[in-house]
Length: 349
Image (tube, rainbow, N blue to C red; front, top):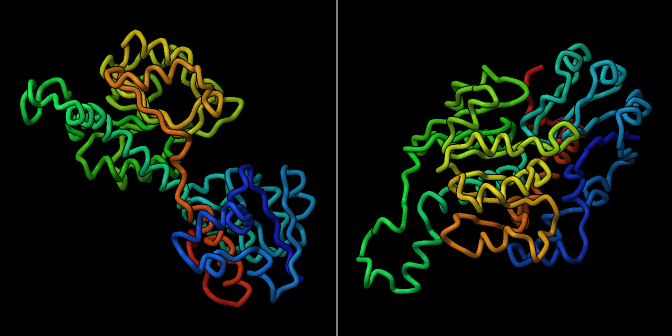
């Protein structure tokens, strides 16, 4: 008998192992052998007698951890005293490299290995973020219009001032939050020669040199950045954390990017700033209400290319195989441990 406890505030740990017809229809065009390469939980553990316990609260974890063999976590904070009750644990795993919610000292005291599996989902969001930023800096929508309307006949061939093209290396990127989406963003920025600032509720001095980032206070980030990109979780404390005050501190040329959660932002305040041209633009993949209402003012701003507003339909995370790869990163490690093989993504305890 193998007992596995899962505590996941989002559901990503098991999502990739739960397939319905729609998801399989997504996968088959990319891989005719999708059914074989995207196994279900039952198929993966067919040779084992597994009890799977999915918890929604820390109290539930505490009630089941004493005789658990494996503990898998995602986007939660586990108290040390709860983990210390897991005397039978053989492996603790976190889905996502930013494993700050795992009490490492307690894991070390238990002598249990800890892994942090990278989230392909989050890399997809970071890539999407960067596409939005480059589309803005290179004025791709204006350039597309320039060609479609043959404006170069009157405005000239090349790069007339109306295209407003900017260089990434001249920009300062401000990252609001420094978790697993922000960190690859910092790497991309360094590759483009950008200066990168970050703010987080916790400072990461051990990462600042590796990612070429500078920690700054909250107000400094909003005032100094040419591009502000939000990567925070939505909680009671972060609801509308980006208010009229923060938007009012931004440079008049600055771009606001949000691919995290729409409810982090006072959306009417952002719309007012865009309509009044008090900031340079916005690139949004998420909205306060989703799907975005058909009569929302953001649509009109998006449709007027000169307003510098670019919207996408909460698609940043997508890639047909992201959810499968994320889940398999965790569950294949469980199988490795059961077989006595070395696990992947181990972090020091």
